[in-house]
Length: 237
Image 1 (cartoon, rainbow, N blue to C red):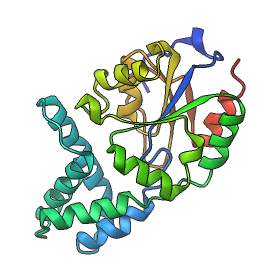
Image 2 (cartoon, rainbow, N blue to C red):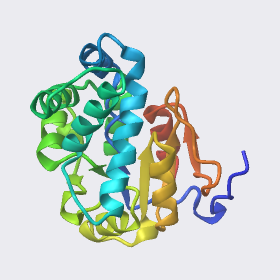
Image 3 (tube, one colour):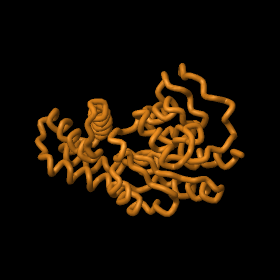
Image 4 (cartoon, rainbow, N blue to C red):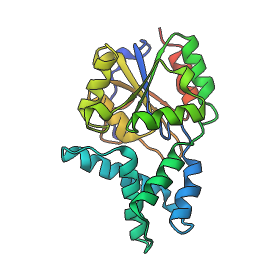
């Protein structure tokens, strides 16, 4: 891959705050396949199309100076994918499906051990998501992750979704740290790219089906799951 080089001078130095993406990075989206699949006439393979459509239109909303709750964007994307397969889903029903499915996601198997190790190592952990504040609270309560985090941040107050530069700048300011003192841990190439271009550091979690963006700056950590990322970070001084 023709990735831009990461900054070697910061490797091994502890970031002050670790910001975690939530959906797919910490929480397993596999269970969403069944619910979205049912809504799409049993077509579980359409999950990835729905998710990328949701991300695309979240960016459209932000780029147009608008803001809609992430769950509403997800519901609209579900309606669009359904319509392209001759399936009609009402707005209320689509929102009900997405809210129920996204609100009850389990954590990936290694996540709690990883977070526990980072807590023990003295890191400050922050959840940083495009989901709504209420949606994030529900997700973490159901997944049993609340106790591991010092702060849970939704980008709602910014009126823009990640990966807009303003969202990362806001997150750093919210935690009272400089941009270079922040590290994003995420399983999405677009998210780590946005963070790096905004002046943050980043770790990429290479979940199945996820790849870094070849035109972005290379992340200093590249591991298959959050536990492996935590093992690297606990060696930082």
